[in-house]
Image (cartoon, rainbow, N blue to C red; front, side, top):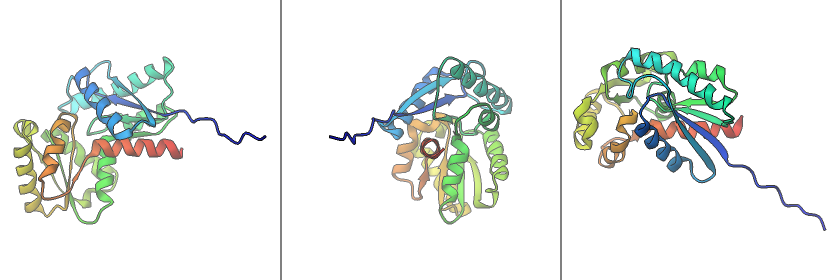
Length: 223
């Protein structure tokens, strides 16, 4: 009698790199990735070994770009073998260098979110916390050819980053002013309020964090 059964496939391995040095943020990112990826994916989450606890400016982002490559190489030398990596920062520090340094696909919060928003018709806005991040995201959008799709970049500020109702009001006002059809709202610090912001927002919200996780998994399965 022939045995036509197939061996069980190993779960896909996803590594999430937190470019900040905060372990609390890493735990938040791991929980988000596990929720989005589901049981068929094994998620590991690692924290940058040097840099800022929370990246807020260009200097911090530049250091984080080096820290991302550093911790990825350290993990691989220690035996990690991810099928894909997510850079878990809404700005993707070090993404190009990391893609050259590792043998698997790499996705980043910012590029994945912007491309997901651009798949739908009409202009979209980008919101985050920090004017410096808005400038850096505008530069990224130009690099990947999406500048003409973005109606504006909005820095919501620290108060709105903690208050879903205030954040929602700011996004709504900006969308009405600029004609945005949807909003990409990103930043690891904003993950706790994202669902509440989206709940009563009068325009669709693109979650770049989950978009990046989905993209990394898709890339891993087709590479």
